Image 1: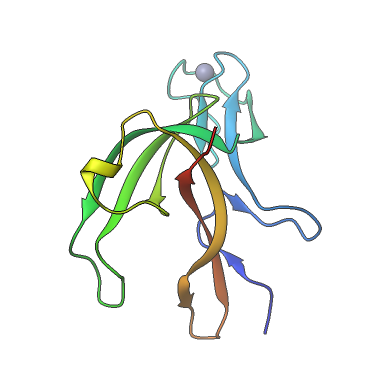
Image 2: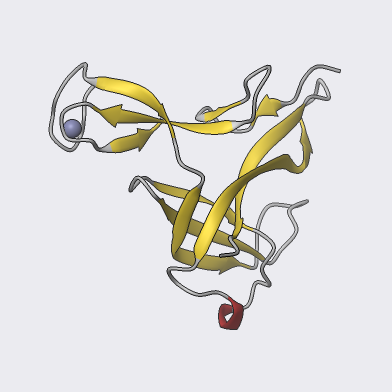
Amino acid sequence: MSDPLPAVNFLKLPKDGDPYLEGHKCGSCGATYLGERTVCSKCGTRDQITPVTLPTNGKLYSYSIVHRSFPGIDVPYISAIVDLEDGTAIKGNLIKVDPDPAKIEFGMPVEVVFDDALGRKDKEGNSYISYFFQPRSS
Ligand SMILES: [Zn+2]
């Protein structure tokens, strides 16, 4: 069995350190993106984009409760868009909250956590680490 693999390419799993999400930040206007790119789509600057570690704290911007999904995926679950502290918008599943609109508030503080990707394995038996959002206490 090998080490778990990241479920998405912007999730980094250092050999000796905590997992983190990697963004790419434009040195000219400060816009941050998920995934690599060479040209900033906001200001058009080229070759000024460097990798940054994204913050783990953010706020719930939007969400939807998903009642139907692929076979093997437990429903309902909450698909959320979170604005991280540096302004990066990121999509993921919100956990540790009932999928009930009465329990979910726009703007509520959330944090990024890393966990096994719901038991998903590829055909070689590798497991995956993914990221989730959960409510932040404070
Ligand atoms: Zn830019």
